[in-house]
Picture 1 (tube, rainbow, N blue to C red):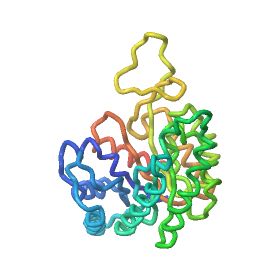
Picture 2 (cartoon, rainbow, N blue to C red):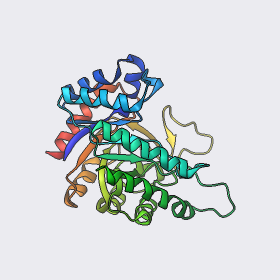
Picture 3 (cartoon, helix red, strand yellow):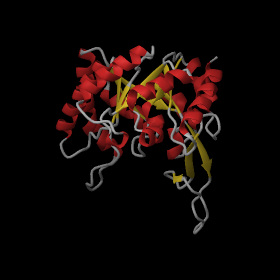
Length: 288
């Protein structure tokens, strides 16, 4: 497996430094990462604006200069929006950005909500989304890019739901970005969930959380923690320092035949660059 890092992991550092993608890429290469995956390129919070195709070409040039691959492009999406056909067309344009980046994979969301209709279920959502997601992956396949969705966002985060979505889309070009940590947010056993996901793996995020049981009624939530679907607590942390058995998850994926990219995704409160340096060392040890 090859070790990459998500630009999202640099979020606070990019916000504070405003140094841009080229310096971020230089830092990633210095730590030892073999690739950087990017989220939506135009990001005013990072001081980065402009045409995404132009930005993609600049990023590609910078990555090439430091010998780094761009294994994936990650974008926000909502296929249960008020105009899902327009959303599908928009995500097809994101495929063009991925092409300009030289990224062989586009990861997009499914949806973070259900329609406010009587009796509308997550299964109904899948039936509505699947044809449009298939349309996107068919376009992506025509330009040599695969697409995938991550277990992410409460509604389509549990393993059986993501599996159902991928099966409903039913296209060999569409698969799963497995985030080994995110299953904790919907209170699922990470190893059991990875076993379900492994046959569909197109890409992997390595992420760690500190996990605590639900607090008693009236008890305050510790600083930085969030509630899971069942009310338990989670907070991002340095890879290898939390409660997710990341090493076992990666071992399971390896045994299942996965040999692609593993990207570190850090969303903890610790200082960013030391956290990424420690996380890289942990990943390198896991995959050695």
